[in-house]
Amino acid sequence: MTTVQEFNTSTTNRTLSIEEQATFIAQAEQDIARTMKKLNQYFWERKPKMENLRSTTRHISYRPPSIKQRVSRPEIGVFAYVTEEQINHWKSVPQFQYYLYVFSAGSDTAEAKVVDQGYDLEGDATITITEIEQRHVVINTKSGKMTILL
Image (tube, rainbow, N blue to C red; front, side, top):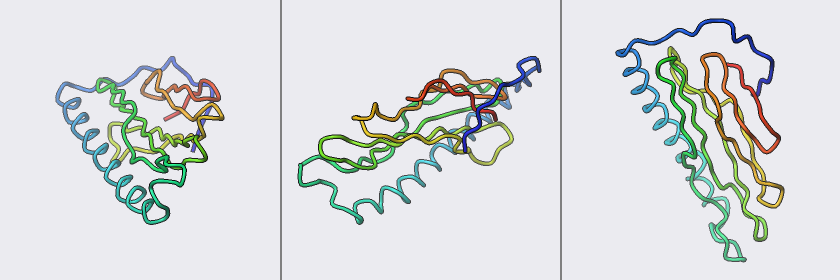
């Protein structure tokens, strides 16, 4: 799912027209809505059935998915976003899961590129988008900086 490599930055980026950018933004927003609906239906609706939402320690075991970060570059046709979901709770330490999704012009749906999960006690999981280009996305994780080729 994750690709980390050196990349060639000497190639020129294709720039979308104003009309193409508007279409791209609308498609990206629809894709986010579709992704969140899928996450909420598939994951969140089943979790309360698997285990009681409140543990015996009175901590909440699960929290529904949400968008943590969104970065758009409509001029080059790339939109990336990070989802966040609390997937477990052990003693007093919550466990979070993050996904990086990338939607590119000409795509039907965003592709999940990276997943990171961990307990707060272990330094937590995290994905933060720091750069978006037409051929790559740069993120920071608890393991450090990563370049994801598109």
